[in-house]
Length: 105
Image (cartoon, rainbow, N blue to C red; front, side, top):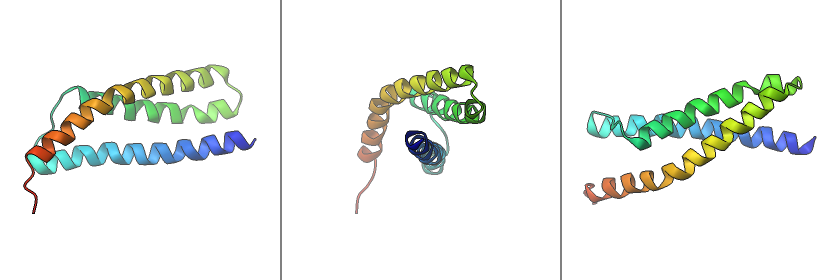
């Protein structure tokens, strides 16, 4: 129905924006510093990106009525939500550090 269509559209937008932001964050960090910093923020972001891909890959099975795929989809996205909430403060700390060492015009 209508809810499913809206959910699919929002999920696709979140997937596209999230994966793009995840890759952009790594590329931006590497281009500025010449390295990545393997800490909790990077690992949580990688886990979120992988979980999004796995959750999205379950959609065809869900559309065929596979309840295990639906349960796994919900569980993965619940874990993603928790990781995201945990990742926000670590991301904010990174932004503050970047601003601290940025020379502004």
